[in-house]
Each structure stands twice: as structure tokens, then as C-alpha cells.
Length: 186
Image 1: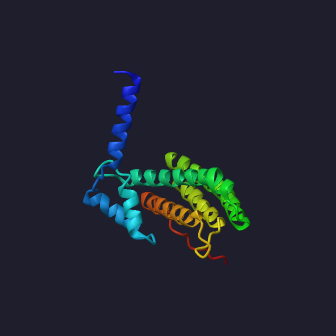
Image 2 (image 1 turned 120 degrees about the horizontal axis):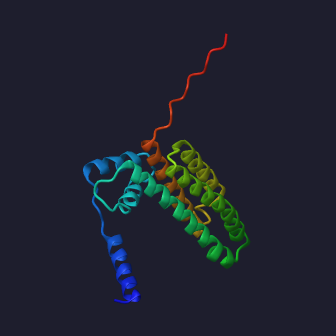
Image 3 (image 1 turned 45 degrees about the horizontal axis):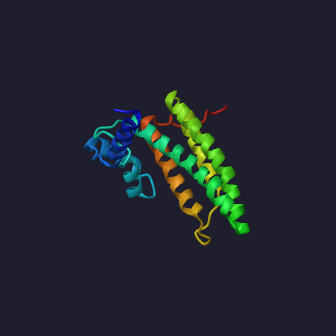
């Protein structure tokens, strides 16, 4: 079998396995429900997480990794779409200004989510959540309006949802420490 045939069979296998839907076991579904009930769109969240599963039983650590990676990959794809398609093809001055602001914002989102993934693998969940929160702040810098619909309206909503899902998963993985009461000074 030639290298070409091996490559084709591998691609077919990858494509085939990516379309197979894994139904999570009850324990995994409970983890997914805990994450998704905190979002504004339960169905989107449930579908997003479930579509990434390769086994029925999955740990919260794996779900946190999958959701963090999904958010980061989406940021890269959105930035690539802005720079490669939206910005060069924009004719309206208002659209160009929006896409340029979004390009700057998504460069930061990409960097913050990249750092969040690094800290996830270093098991430093506090810094991971901090970088994910910074990414959310930068997503909001890409201002879009439903009254002036552009492709960035949905992209921003999608990015915010994916980042929220990753944050909620990381909070279940490693809950933030409780707030310390203020010390009373005499």
C-alpha cells in the first residue's frame, strides 16, 4: 500500500469517526448538564460538548481540555476569517472599522486562550481561568450590533459561548478558592 493510499484511508477514518455521535453515560451527562445550565443556551452547550466526546464516559478534566481547546481553535479560525476574508472584502467604511477593531480584539483573544491552555496543562487552574476571563473581556471589545448584522455578530456570540463553556468546565474541575473574610483592624 502506498503512502497516498494510507493517507486517504486515514482521512476517511478520521472523517468517519468525527461524524459518529457518542451518547454520554449518565455520569458524564451530569457533568455536561452542570456546565450547560450556567450558560444562556443549554442546547448549544450540550451539543458543543457532546460532539467532541470520543468515549461515553469522560472526566471533567477531559471536558475542560476539550472545551478550552475548542474555544482557542475557534478564536484562531475567527481571526483568520477576519484577516483573510471579512476585512479585505469590506466595502462599507463602518464594516471596515468594525472588522479592524475585531481583528485587534481577536489577536488578544487568541493569545489569552493560548495562555489559558498552557496553564491548563501545567495544572495551574487559577491562571487558566484568569486568561479565559481576559479573553471574554477582549471579545467584548469587538463591538457588534444585531441592528447592523455582519458575520461578526454570530462569530462573537459563538466565541463568547465557547469561552463561557470552557470557564464553567474549569470551575468544576478546580473550584476557585473561597473568598477570605476581611480582617478586622483594631
